[in-house]
Amino acid sequence: MTKLNYSISINAPKDTVWHTMLDLDTYKLWTEAFFPGSYYEGSWEKGSEIRFVAEADGGKSGMLGCIVENIPCEFVSIEYLGELENGKLKTTDGSSLWVGAHENYSFTETGGLTKLEVELRADNGGDELTETFDAMWPKALQKLREMCEKV
Image (cartoon, rainbow, N blue to C red):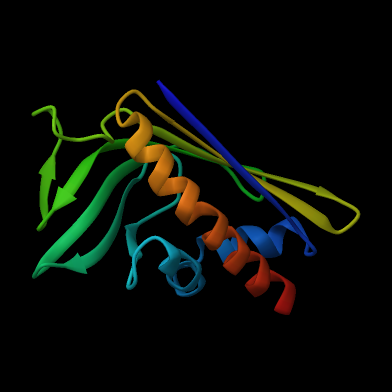
């Protein structure tokens, strides 16, 4: 199992960090670190399906997830159901690194400073996921911090 953790302290209240991270218009900006043009379709509500997508090679590619938990301004948990490739879902053929993976976001505020913690757990992927996300998450979190601290 691969378990990755990333965190950042942001000089802003946790409700600002929460909304900047999860509202669609601002989500599109900080997630450019993962893939230019990234966005989501769906809802952050508990039990909802959500698709994290970008246009690539003439179709939508990305990931399909389900919101396992959502405690506003405190915690979000996503379970990934598979990958989207050109709009088609890859789940059980063994080629998806994402089936069953979990991504959790925790928000803790102390004196106006918010600590955002990201945890990613995946049964598949190992070094490939680690290398990819070790390069992308720090850049994404830095962009998120810059956006939150401008508010």
